Each structure stands twice: as structure tokens, then as C-alpha cells.
Length: 286
Image (cartoon, rainbow, N blue to C red; front, side, top):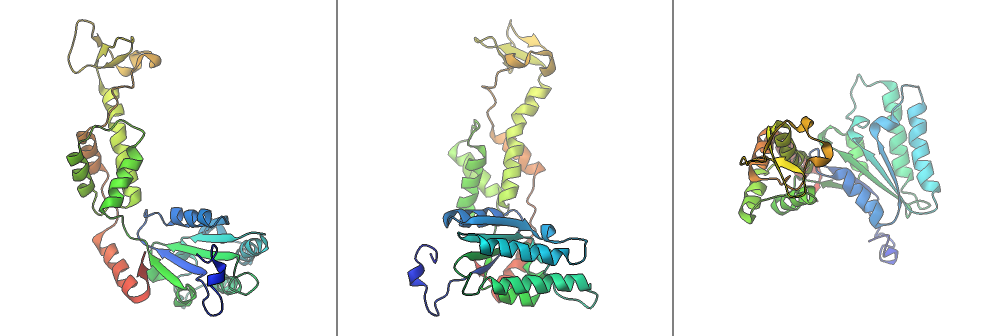
């Protein structure tokens, strides 16, 4: 809204310009940042904390300074997105090395500088982390909004399953779709993508294990469920590649069941509890 209706955000009504996105891995924090940049038609600067860390003394501070300088000098709006921000902003310790302190100091300086009157209408800083409780309190304070990106709820999981399988023939009834959605409770978006891909590959695995084939009217072959007089005994590699039909590669309920057993959810209840506790103290649900 601030970019679309700037006249509404005047005086003390300043928009939030430094936002932390946190949540379990695979919930789409990076995609969300990219979508925000696209929505406000801005230049998107996407880096991970590893991109900003160098083994050369003073080089990391220079990289951070150049990133913010480039965004400031950009003629249009800029969204700076730093992924895995916790890698360079962890809580201070007595054993912390001097170059790590300098990196933190420079990043804090640039975060504050990006909010000055000259650049406040141009730069929007987004950072993401999977473990917000490890962030230095000094950095937590700099984020005006700390938004929890949770695991997808039921309807979102349904949409993700359909999205990742939309270009393939999936032979499921509405009831089977609903059962599948229930089985993915606790899955992240990334978990669902991986599980669905596993299910889509099951018909290919059936191809590789097939020993008998039936010829179709178009002269191509498909694995034989029932043997006919023109059935052929062969392995997949024995057949010409252009003679193998793709029309029977539909995904069944059993393919998803196999994949669910192989690809389980990756976020534990213990981790979710930690996010819940952090959100109550420092953040808010997205």
C-alpha cells in the first residue's frame, strides 16, 4: 500500500520498511519476497547470508555496503532480500570473532541508513530465517514487523497438490483427493512438492519393471495388464524409444500412498512449538 498510495502514509504514519519473515523450512518465504517485489514493481536484490561473507578481512563489510549502495542509487524502488539472515546475525558470545562483530555492525548501520529520508521511499528490506530465536536482539529490534510464515493449512495443501500435479494425468476421485490432503497434515510446501514428484514418477518406475507389452492401434506399446495374442515379452530398453506410449502414464491413489511412505514431513512438533513460543513473544502470524 505505501508504494501505491504514498499520500496516505505521511507525518508519523510511516510504513514498515524492515520486515523479518520466519518459519519452518520450505514454507515459501523466498517466493513471498519475490512476489512482493513483483507486486510493487521494484528491482529485486536477492542474496543469502553466504553471499555476504568472505574469508578476506574487510571484504564482507564492503559487500554489505555495496549491496545497500546499489539499491539506494537505483532509480526506481528496490527490495533487498537477505535469506538465512541468522547465519550472520546470531546472538553475541564472548568467543565471537572480531570480523563477525564488524559484519554485524556494518549490517546494522546499513539497515538504519536505508530508513533515512533520502531513501525511505525507495528501499524495502526483507529478511528470512528458519530459526528466529537465534537472532541477536539488536537485529530483532531493527525489524519493525516480524511475521510468522507457518506450514500450509488444509486448503493451501489441496491447492499445492493440484498445482504440482496439474500437467500430469492424475486418476483420483474427490474423496481420494480429500484423503490425500488429510495425509499431508504437517507437510511444508516443499515437502508436498517432493512427495508429489515422487508419486508422478511411480508410473515411470512401473515402465522400467514391465516385462510384457501390448501394441496399441497407433503401433506403440504400453505395459500389459492382460496378455493378448500380439503381446510382446521385452524390457523397456528393448523397445524403440518412439514406440513407447505415454498415454497410460496416469497417477493413481497407490502411487501417492507409496510416495507418502517414502517422503515424510520434515518439520517436527518440537520445532513448531518453538515457533509458537517465539511468535507469542516477538512476532505475529502471517
